[in-house]
Image (cartoon, rainbow, N blue to C red; front, top):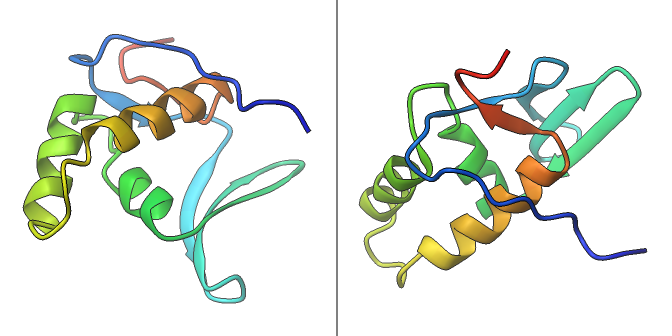
Length: 100
């Protein structure tokens, strides 16, 4: 298996889940998932918490703020959130909310 594909993007632009994916809680997997026509991506733990905030109105910066507010006991989350969202963007799971 290769390295996860990372794609940098503008951190100030709101992000949304890409058109062919549906984000939901999956009881059988006991985690959040992204469903798409050919399969499913499991998003356990922090990945699901990050994706819960990708709603088309929040930028990376506001997602980090929301997570820091929800989990004040956690250390600085920014680097981990950036890493995950760059991989999610590289895999086509998310996109800028204003993209066609």
